[in-house]
Structure formats: C-alpha cells, structure tokens
Amino acid sequence: MRRFAAVALLAISACKQAESPRLTPAELPNTPWDKIAQAARGTTVTFAMWAGDEERNRLFRSSVSKSLLREYNMVLHVVPLADTADVINKLLNEKGAGKLQKGSIDVVWINGENFRTAKQAKLLWGPFADALPNIRYYDDGARARDFGTSVDGYEAPWQRAQFVMAYDTSRVTEPPRSIDALGSWIKAHPGRFTYVAPPDFTGSAFLRHILLHFGGYSAGFQAGFDAKLYKDASEKAIQFLTEIKPYLWRRGDTYPSTLKELDRAFANNEVDFAMSYTPSFASTRIARGEFPSSVRTFLFDRGTIGNFSYLAIPFNASNPEGALVAINHLLSVEQALDLSEASQSQFPISLDKLSATERKRADALRRGPATMSNEELAAHFANEPDAGYLTRLEQDWLDKVLRR
Image (cartoon, rainbow, N blue to C red):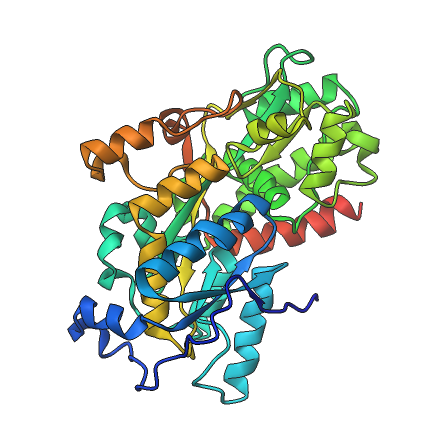
C-alpha cells in the first residue's frame, strides 16, 4: 500500500488554526452558519482526495485554493491518495490508538464501500450535511443512499458520475446496446473486446452491469444485500463472463490492469471498445490527440450505472468548522460550474434548482464531440447496487472466472 504525503497547495505562514474548542456534532444544529464561517476564517483545511484526475488536481491547485483564500482566508492543504481505502485504514488505526482529536484529515472525498466501512466503524463526524446552506441544490436521492448505504447526513454529495462505453465509428457502425447484444458481438469478433480487471473501479462497474442485467434491474439491488437475488443473478452473470472469456483480447488469459492500459489498447486498434465512469472521457482523449475524432460514446438501452461521490469529515478532524465551510463552498453553483467547465465532467446539481442566470450558464457548458447531453445520460441512469453485491461479485469473478 502506497503511503501518501501532504502537499500544500498554498503556503501562508501567517495562517494559524483557531485556538478555540472545536465544534461538536451535537452543537451543530444550534450553531448559526455565520458563526461557523467566522470560526473557519484564517484556518487550514486538510483535504484527502484521490489524485488520479490531473484536470481536477490542477483546478484545486489554482481556482479552488484561491477562492477559499479570497473568501475565507483559508488555506487548502491536499493529501493526494492513490486509493481512498488508504485514508480509511489510517482513520481505523487512529481510532484504535485512541486518537480521538486533532486528526490529520479534515475532509475526505469518499463513496461506496469506503463510506460503508467508515460509517459502520463510526469514523465520520456528523451528521452534518443538512446544515450546509448549499445542500439545497442537490437531489434528495443523492442525499439519501450511497451504493445502498443510508447516508444519514454523514456525507454531502459532490460529483456525479455515470458509466459510458466508447467506440470508433470508423470501425464499428452500430455498437451493441444491451448485455445480450454485447455478448453476441464479442463472440462474433474474437479478440476485439476486453475490460479492466477488478478490483479496478471501472472494471468492477462493468461486472455490475452484467449482474443487474441478469437480475432484471430489480429495485432489490438497492435495498441491502439479498442473498437469493444475488445467487440467481450472479450464477447467470458468471456463466456469461465465463462464456465470453475465450473470445476476449488475448483470449482472456490476461486483462488490462488499469484504465490507461485499456485506453492504450483501444487507441492502438487492439480492441474496439473503451469504457469509463466519466461521460466526457472520450472527448478529453480526442482533445489530447489520444483518440481519433471519430470516437463516440454510448449507453445500454436499459441504462448504465451512475452514482455520486461525496465529501465527509473524519471523526477526529482538527478543524470541523473549516471542513464544513470548505465542503459548502465546493457544493456551490459557482464551484460546480467551474469544475464541470474545466474538466468537462457531468454537472452534479439539479438543473431545476438553478436560477435563470445559473441555468443559462449550465446549459452553455462545453460538451465535447463524444459527450452525450445531461438529459440523455439522466434518461439512462441506473442506480448503483448495494455495496455488498460489489464485494461478492469481485470475489466470485476472481475465483470462478479469472482463475479458471
């Protein structure tokens, strides 16, 4: 497991943490927001976030840090993570060692399994989300459940993602728009398809689409882990994955270990499809000259899995007031627009909650040639199954597909 080091995005030596006692979750409901914002002024907020998106990293080094400094005299300190599980393990160790105050992390970017683990282990400060003024912009659904786990105010929705697949129109005239059609296409085109090996997040998401398909996209997938539903759907899913294995790239003897490896195989004309949880990824690759301009993205007719990622506060955060203000700032319409514009990522805020001026700017956001509209993505949005299905399916894939 790779260690992470704190990297200062801005260094202001005169900036010191407030000496007053830290706000507690019990005090939060009766504390005016203005008082919280005042306590956060002049402090440093340490933010642990996955560092695999360079566009987002650049934005945090520039406009996000500068806007927090300008508006609140706050310094943003980022802890770059190779895997969010690293910070969860750190918090587990700190709690086990009795370090209940003055922790090293104030905000963590989190969702899915990591959130479930953190919540179950009582590693999070809160509930806090309903106290944020900007939470009003986000859908009730995003505020309710995360990979089937009840949020209960222990995290605030931040970024929206949705699985898409990419193809080159110069090679494939009409992509398969269902799991059954994809299976037939793979068998008719040996060696031209592969997916990233789980536990890579996107590779695991590909498997979950197959599980949902054979489970009839049942709403039961979001209502906690159902052993019978899993057994019935997973048996068919594993059979499907086993049947297509000999027809995959390199005969299924090996799989790309990262999205970069899959992108490279796609760009080199080794395979005919790429995939990502970022709907704009193909447009970004086109702009960089990595994919040809003829590449486009598509969705399955029954839908593709989408979710939110969230911002949470560790149980022993040294600066909960600063964390609350930083999170609320990141949830603002202005920050959502800036991030969506800079990275061409999916706009996370409900359009019907915007003012006319805000809606006009949201509608004018740049959308690359391979990026589908927010309306089309929303029309094909499928909810994530409960996180319990993810762990079981990854293990079954390892035991019954990869090793056979």
